[in-house]
Length: 285
Ligand code: AMP
Ligand code: ZN
Ligand code: FE
Ligand code: FE
Image (tube, rainbow, N blue to C red; front, side, top):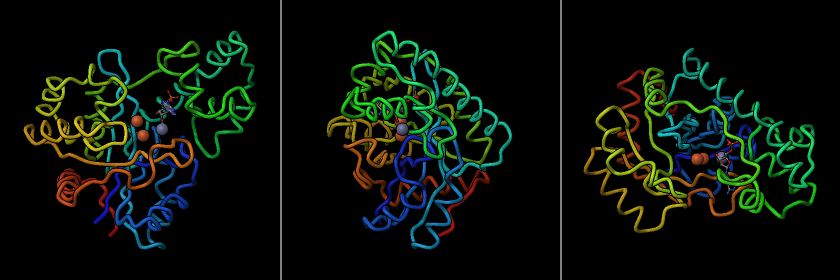
């Protein structure tokens, strides 16, 4: 079985609509794919329907924007009831926060000689219900200010870049609780990518595991071989589910083709058992 548990559609900052993404997952030989758009469940019905037609299992998921110690941490939630009132209210708050800082970001960019209007950014958003930095990056590409998203982030939009504007993010422990209360399983996304090992130390992950965390995404394109090995060992020691995924964004990220990293069947079964125990949403097949 080939299982990829982290992908983004055009309902967040990926480039393929959910149905196209699921068909592509089937075409490249995956048996299971999870849709994990940023802070929204909106793409799940279309993805599940496409999975039914194409004959591939679709697990509903989400990637939540959280914070720990003032630093950004991404948390994957799988099998959540998508009508859970506290969780859907929190997702709406996150989306409002993301879109709400657009004007401040455009002001900073204008000061740097990059003039963009909000309309030009909305034009890049597809069916996404909130506007994020990747859409700003796409608008910069469309107007010829930069060659691609990577250059936009490296020169302007990264967390320590000159056009960065912070936004609301859920406290990490609260986010794990919200996912559990909605029946889901909580997995730390790319915990040691892009310098985040300093935030999520082994000691911190151990405390989260003792609290409630279900798993860590050990295999991810942004982790080198040694990092993956170390995370797998840490996960095994702490009784965490170790997943592997591509973090596919269509053409929005170049290093993340579907199936670039995969999850073992045993880890996937463990995840589904946890979702089942909490009364969450199991995939259809
Ligand atoms: P936002 O949610 O608006 O703060 O934007 C953050 C999102 O931008 C992340 O979740 C990633 O999907 C994306 N991102 C972050 N860094 C990069 C990068 N260097 N290149 C492309 N996309 C990135
Ligand atoms: Zn993304
Ligand atoms: Fe992420
Ligand atoms: Fe992601």
